[in-house]
Amino acid sequence: MSVVYTPASHTILNLSLDRILIYPPTRIGAVNITYADLKRLDSGEFLNDTLIEFGLKLWLNELRVEKPELADQIHVFSSFFYTQL
Image (cartoon, rainbow, N blue to C red; front, side, top):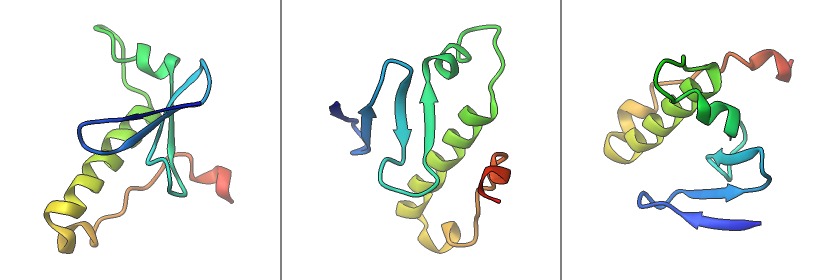
């Protein structure tokens, strides 16, 4: 397993050929990005729930640094919540 550090100091773990990113890597509720998800970023493709959730979590974590009082008022609701029931 290799570990790569991004400019934003977030850890990216390459765990397998299919799963290319886990974000955030040390938290419950992390988002797993696969090569299939990555292909959805190509021109003419549509985003899926995983990519949208990743973008929202990334934005919220950056907001926690810039405006923690505002970030505490926000919850990112996952469309995959039923897997936890």
